[in-house]
Length: 219
Length: 219
Image (cartoon, rainbow over all chains, first blue to last red; front, side, top):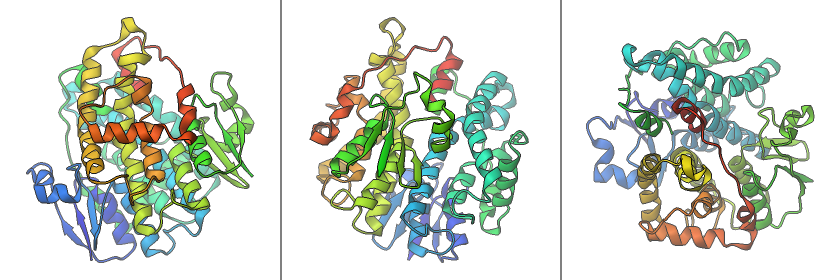
């Protein structure tokens, strides 16, 4: 029995997407940091970091949304799963790449386009975030202009993991038209029926009062 | 035939450590961003991101140092490798965790302890970096006070990947004594004979002129 912990407003929607793609039955616990339930002693036994998502599969306890998805792909097999050790390496590579190259600058861009109160947005911060993103997005756009998908010419956990990091693009109305192959791939990926939970995500971030606070929030 | 690209002053030393643990012969190309060789057309065919490390194993081209190490563990087997799908999931989970929880705040702490010129270090930035690190380091310290290693009670790719992210701790003389089990585990891990390349790492970072530049560097 699989239990997924985490409100669909959190990164748990990444793992719900994966479970739905795989047609796997799962129990959902909408554990939420807002009501303190991510810091209950019981939950901390499951994920000592006090974060969601977390997943329990019989005795196996996992955290880190994208690692959970790589595990689910391998456990349940099928087209989303790596077919061999080389594909496993590439799907893991692109997953780590999404975290190291995209996640943080995209959050900064989204904060300054939508998530911060309008009066506290900075065009300069938006611009430097986009400038950082232009390199990895250029790499991804070129890759997707030459391949239908990230790995193996089919929709796999690599597409799902990268696209799930990029749900902030439509949420924050960021224009991907300079990267047309990426733009098209992301739209098609996020319209998959199993992906729909991201559409319910709605949150605001209060801007930290100081530049030191900004640095602390985004590192 | 395996070729590892990247100067040992770069994150390529993470992969050299893994290859040496596995006793795998490899060719080393000390590709370096300083002389522009990471942006040669030939290198960009291998890693379109223009970053090191990259690895070629016959036809397979890989980037992202920690993904390369997970691949090498699985390809060559032995005690560093996951023994089953559950261990694979946990080793991947802890690898992603090191990137999402430790890498960036540790770089900020190291910058303000050693890597920036002495006159441009900020005690406040050092303090907020340590404050961010105290949560994941607390988690890791507790885990290591209850287990000899990260996964499976033996030194594995999970230990190697986390410890290789944490080479900045001794390089920047950061005091881990508040986390004694972590402190001991890291010292023992980094003294393994195969790990010695990190000791040659020596670099300085020029402090960006503005707070916007700081944000851009560390996101």
